Length: 336
Image (cartoon, rainbow, N blue to C red):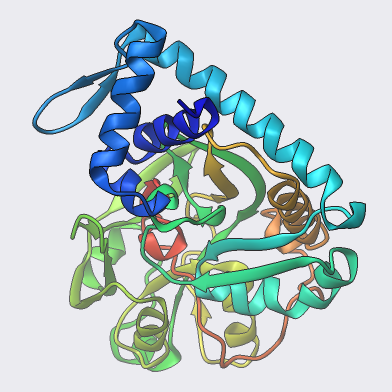
């Protein structure tokens, strides 16, 4: 029995929670994966997995063996990496995923710096608003906004978005400007719904250190960032977006801040990866670089009145919505 292959197959079965998905990702026949696991259990003389019709569960012995396997495979990968590529450092393909606005407005303009530092890393960047299954889709790292809820993920906080409530001048001319949170009951919002759950994400405000959620009527609900901002700019209703995204439109007079005395709940920005996946050198340097990138911009650290000189000034860019921490910002709560 090839024990190294057996460890790789076993960890992949656990990561994907499926024999068939593990077989697909490893390019092996499903029967081979089943046989390898059976032979491994016979070799160790323990049951590693409890199989039901719906899912796989690790036994206590399986959980302990899994943690050992992850460390062993990580050590092998790191050892091989240190001797390959002529010792040039982190290298290879790196798959990352992030909301489109973060990618286009924050990350992409600085990619020359990343490639200057790490010329042997080939980035494969996905931009999207929907959650990503890191294991099944083979993604190494994602940048997301929200609170980490999935215990299979690790989130390193790299920044904070401070939100702002805004509306187009033509909307306020038609409907008046709300002066209190209660006034919102007489106004219309552009609603945002979760593409994962279908739930409408309510607006929220921090009042006396407490978060208040406000349900508002809406003429339209969308689950796309650009559509959300476009509706706000066209005067369809009130929206909540990160302040750094709203600034160009505020300065151009295309949006007006409302209820400035009550800010939306700040949103943590995190680099996310599975806790059971070794943080390889290429992932580590990308996460460190992204953290440095966000640290250089006070607006990306939650500072309301900071300068935005570190960001593009175009008003034509798409946005990340701030509407109850929706999925375009990385999901309601981070599940990647």
